[in-house]
Image (cartoon, rainbow over all chains, first blue to last red):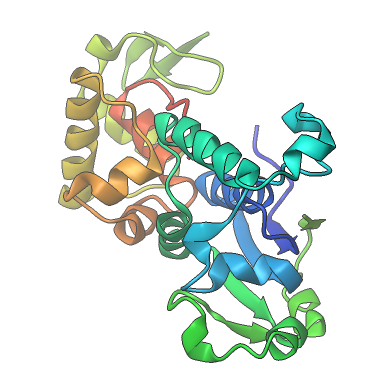
Length: 157
Length: 102
């Protein structure tokens, strides 16, 4: 038994609920298996760690074939909000925590949370815009240097 | 699969979880803990009894549930059982392996 994976590094570049939760569930799942994990939030992924935005992430209803909604309908006003509401309801049934609580769980579990310096500068964000659980703001080079042992895996989401 | 723990032959799952919770006793818990590299303290036993209580009451165990428990927080849970808290603590407690992903 036992896995050869020692550390999982995730790069979250998107702000949709499905992508953010994919990163969160995998990062938390790693910690629960005794595997180290870290998430690097870049570009639109930064929305997931902005205090004012993190509880307002949406499901992508356009350009998402898995939704089984014709693309033109997916673009109608209110469609995204409706799909998001439905998905959040289903997630609550599975005892999936909301984004803010999930970030607290990750941080308490020892998962490191990093913001991408380039993207933070690009979106003109300040420290106070970002969650208190954040471990710091890194360049991509700094983040690569976190892969400092055998058995590291890096995943782009 | 069976396993010889603390001088008793026990039925266990492939991952080493007891199949019959009623077979559990503290010596067995201690032996499993030793195999997992955990040195049991009073606090470990408190958590283990609490987990057994939860399972008896049909509460599904999850990390989110730990956060809400009021008994211990997630940081302490990881400090007590560093290499996979829910997985290892439930094995020591003799209860089934939790199925939750969260």
